[in-house]
Length: 241
Image: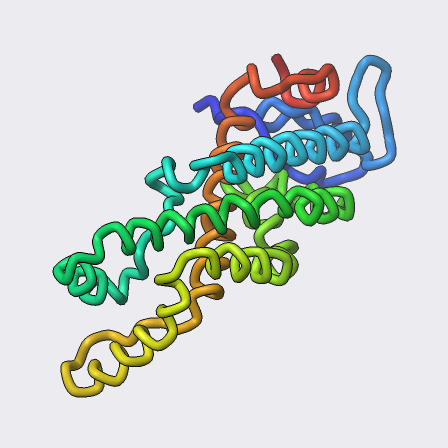
């Protein structure tokens, strides 16, 4: 059964083995070898890095655009799920516009913060070792996204948090969030309602990072499946036309 192209390779089991072809990518037998008209392992890793860089750039462009989060249902940041009862109460007392402004501000904060992501993602891509690269290539669907998530999430959180905080302060309702959440949580001790995280900045920051990696996963899947995503000679040589 023919397997899909891209980003999944088998490491060579012996130095004398012939070049392997796995998921459409030609892997030479020795990591430092090259063959006339063929690809060295260095070529393969360079192609992977280029593919990841392209995917990261497209993801950041999407997420950081105006309404990049707000108009994307899969990554749009909602009123915290634990606080839907709070949202209903606010709407019922005539605060529909304030609630909508609050939700839009959370998404604007994510869009603004995402502008800072590319330099962090690129550092992780450039710092990827040959071993990391081959582990990704062996790893199957989502392996590249998982690698970037593992390597960058902490740095992204630290970079995003102050940007999110500054954006959240622009809307009045966000300044009421902590006392509202704390009051709601105190009442919940008697009603049994699920507690709400009073730290809105942390909530939005984590949701922004989660949304970014949804976009990165989409780009990884596209590069795997769509020949049109292979936009350079190196990518076409490594991954096929």
